[in-house]
Amino acid sequence: MADKNRMNVGDYLRRYGQAASPTSKSKYGNKKVVADGMTFDSKFEAKVYEELKLLKAGGQVEEFECQAEYPFVINGVKVCTYVADFVVNWTDGREEVWDAKGFRTKEYIIKKKLLKALYGIDIVERGIKPRKAKEKKCKGNLLI
Image 1 (tube, helix red, strand yellow):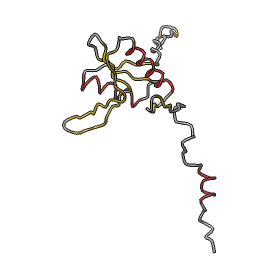
Image 2 (cartoon, helix red, strand yellow):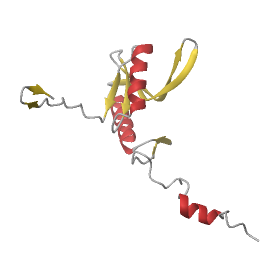
Image 3 (tube, one colour):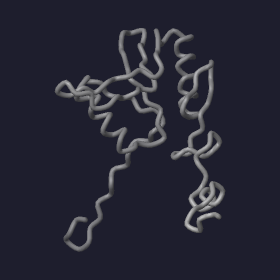
Image 4 (cartoon, helix red, strand yellow):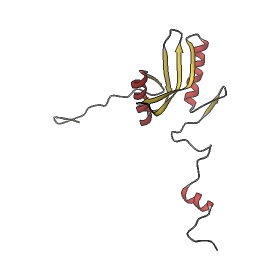
């Protein structure tokens, strides 16, 4: 005899939702893309990869690396790791870290600051529009 307080798998999934599947929508709406046998987190990231290939073919970029890791070690303790979308080595000797983003998450902002503090590297953000300066409004004699 079945216990009235128990649910079968079908009832559980109907009540609490299905588990995430490979075809389910991602949290930020991006879709994984495969280019040259590599999987990119978004269409935009794959587009930036194609742009870098053209820059390399044109002789402006000497080399570039995908998914380079920067561990954040503080006082001998590994706190986390930043994974850069691309590290670009230009023919004039410059090296840049590129990140293809739709928008800045809180986690990304913290990791960006840690990368600057620990490695002295500024991230070149691709795809993020510059922030607009907030307009100050006056109400009487008070600035809000």
